[in-house]
Amino acid sequence: MAVGMLESLLDNDRLFLDYITYGFFIFSVFTVIVLPWIPAPYGRYSNSKWGWALNAKLSWFLQELPAVCVPTCLLLFTECPRVSFAVNKILTALFVCHYLQRTFVFPFLIRGGKPSTLITVFLAFLFCTFNSYQQTRYLLKYAVYPPDWIFSIRFIGGCLLFFIGMAINIHSDHILRNLRKPGEKDYKIPQGGFFEYVSSANFFGEILEWFGYALACWSLPAASFAFCSLFILGARGYTHHQFYLKKFENYPPDRKAVIPFVF
Image (cartoon, rainbow, N blue to C red; front, side):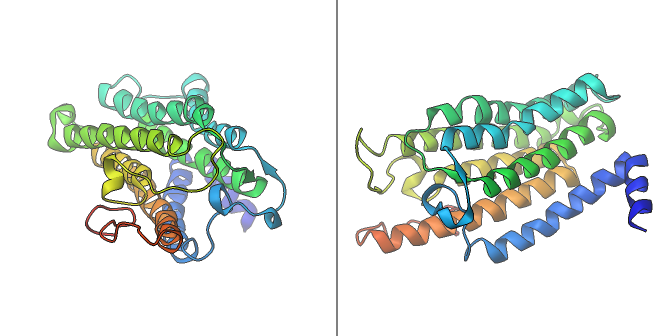
C-alpha cells in the first residue's frame, strides 16, 4: 500500500503538491500547541542537550538555501508552462527575493549569534525545501490567473503588504543587531520601529509579508505557508515576550507579543 501511494505521488505532481499543502496546515496546528512550551533550540533557547550545533551564520545560510536552489532547479530542469505569464513571474520573484535576502545577506550580518542544533537546522532545511517546492512549482506549472489579475485589489494590495512586511522585518533585524555595543552580552529591551508595539517586530514583519503574498497569489499553497508563518513565528514571539517580561521589571506593559494591539 505504501509503495502504491508513493508511485501515485511520483506520477501525479499535483497530488504531491496537495499533500504538502494540507500537511502544512496540519503542521501549523501542531506548532501552535507545542512551540509555546518547548521552544525550538536555537538562538537564546539553544541547548546542548539537543546535540551538536553549528554557528549562527552557517546555520541560517544552510537552512534557507533550499528556498533559492529549488526554484532555480525547477526553472532550469523542469517544464514550467506558466513562466511566460507576468503575474506568475512576479509572484515567483517575490518569493525568491525574500529568500535571497535571508540566505545571502541576513546570515552574514549576524553579530555574535548563538549556535543552532543540527536537528533544528535539518528541520528548517526540510521546511524550506518542501515549501519552496510547493510555492514555485504551483506558480510555474499550475497557477492560472485572469488577464486583469495584475490590476486587481488582491494582487496590488497583497504586493504592497509584502513589501511593507519585508521592510519592517529588515528594519527590525537591524535594530536587534545594534542593541548591544561591542563586547556586551546581556539582553536589552528593543526600542524603536514596531518594537514600540510588539516584542517581536521582526516576526510581525515576516508574518505580514507572507499574508500579503498569500493575498496576491490567492492560492491554498500560499495560504498554508502564511498560516505556518503565523503559528510558528507567533509561538516563538510569545516565548520571547514571556522572556522579556520575566527578565525586565520595567518592560513596557502595553507592548504586545507579535501582533500590534492584538496579541
